[in-house]
Image (cartoon, rainbow, N blue to C red):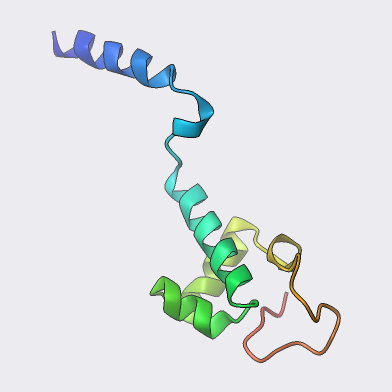
Amino acid sequence: MRLIQHAGARQSFLKLDRQHRVKSIKEVEENSIKDTLSKTGNNIALTADLLGISKSTLYRKAKMLGINKEHFNKGVKGKGSAPRKGALPF
């Protein structure tokens, strides 16, 4: 009986449109990091502090998720100038 209930719930869940799709933890982490980097002007120390993680963890997660300058540098003024202190080196 429990299996039937579970299968019915899964079918109902799969009918949800894209707006109501549940995101994976990886997607949530990636979006959080990109958004925070963008809002802080790519300031690593501030981004890590706001996310509640260490700078080394932020670097590791950014590398693991494939986040690089192209992902979050769009729209940041001063692009092409000297790198700011705390900006990502990659």
